[in-house]
Length: 167
Image (cartoon, rainbow, N blue to C red; front, side):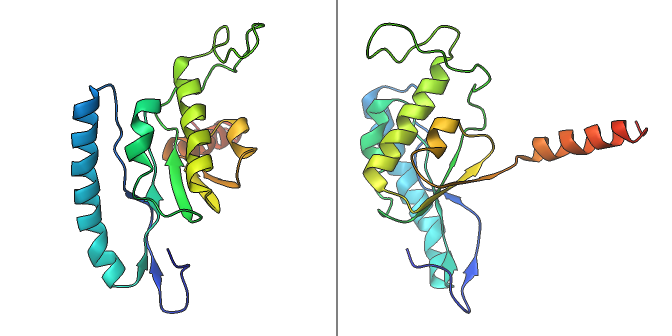
C-alpha cells in the first residue's frame, strides 16, 4: 500500500476480512473467500481512482487467523474495531501460571486481545487506526490511533449540555 501523496484522495477503512463468528471451519473458509472476493471487487475501482484504501481487520477465534490476515499487506496501515466487544470488565489474571482467563473477565476481551496480538505478529502494521476503545495492552504492541465512536461524541455532548444547565 502506498501512502497518500499529492493528488491522491483517501477514503476511510473498507471491509477486507471475514468477521468469522462461530461457524464451522468449512463455513468460515467459504465465508472468508466470499468476503475477500467481494471486498477486492469493491476496492478495485477506488484503487483505480488513486484512493488510499485501508483494510479493516476482524477475527473471531484462533481458527479464523489463517484467513482473516491472509490478503492484507504486511507493514502497512490497517484498521480495527472493538465496537460490539465487551471490554467493560477490567481483566484480572488468575494466579495459575500461564492462565489468561481471569476472574470477572469476559471471554470477548481475551479473544480480542489474542487476535490483535496475532495481527501485530503476522502483519507488523505501521499503525492501527482504531474505531472506539481498544484495550491498553494493545497500545503497548503497536502504535494505535483511536477515533471515538459516534456514541462517545453524543454522550460527551449530552454531558456538556447537562453541566451547562441545558437538558
